[in-house]
Amino acid sequence: MSQEQLGDALNITFQQVQKYERGSNRISASRLWDIGQILDVPVSFFFDDMSDDTAAHSPRRMKSGGVKDDYEENPSDPMARRETLELVRAYYSIKNPNLRKRITEMVKSVATALPEEV
Image (cartoon, rainbow, N blue to C red; front, side, top):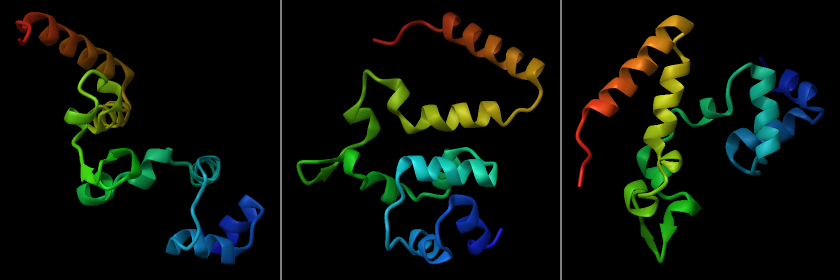
C-alpha cells in the first residue's frame, strides 16, 4: 500500500503519513489503531522489531534517570511484562483452536505440578 493510499484511507495527506514514518510527528494511539485496521495487522505488529534498547528507554521505563527492567518495575504485575505480550502473540499466531486449547491445558498442568517458588 502506498503512502498516498494509506493517507486517503486515514483521511490525511500522504505528507502527514511521511511525517509519521520519519518520526517527525507522533502517532496517537487511536491513529495507530486505525492504521492497524487498514493494514489488517494488530497494533503490536508495529512494535515487533523494536530493539531492547529502544524499549528500555520508553518514558514508562525511565525512572530517576535510570532504566528499570520489567521485573524490577512491575514484579507483581505479570500483565505489564513484555514476555506476557510475546507469549500471547505467539499463542494467537497458532491458527488451530484445538491445538491452542491443548497448549493451554498443558501449561495449566505444568503450572499446577510445579512447586511454588519462594
